[in-house]
Image (cartoon, rainbow, N blue to C red; front, top):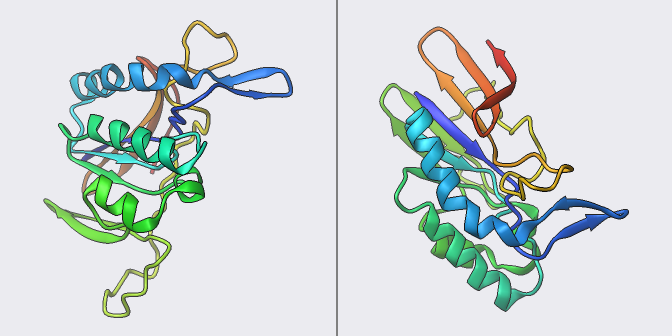
Length: 184
């Protein structure tokens, strides 16, 4: 099984911290469809996992519209959406579930693998989980889709996780360049 992990797209106004442009997010919406297509063509993942923070969190009305537009860009793909802290700042849990067309927690069987995701409201005592679960996070915790022309940014960062019966490989990419990886 191959999983493409994207996170921290932060579509919205630019983020400037201490005079340094951390993300030129106005380009995020423009770049995301191309980036998702590139990941699909290059890696053919079985599943995309969006770790959240699709929006910058300005205000409820703007964020709702922006989140709705961005979440629709994922619709052509098999995707699991998780909520980030930026979604939580201005959007309601039910709103995110409706727009993403999924619950914020659940279990999905994919061939011989089971994907489990736990949300903030997870309270199902009947779901028996293994004692030790591998937890995923993107090793590149910068903005994924940012302005390639700005030297301070890592453009189009994503992670590819590949699992088979004997091992797990996780590699972080910036477009076609693999800059980090681990095999278990």
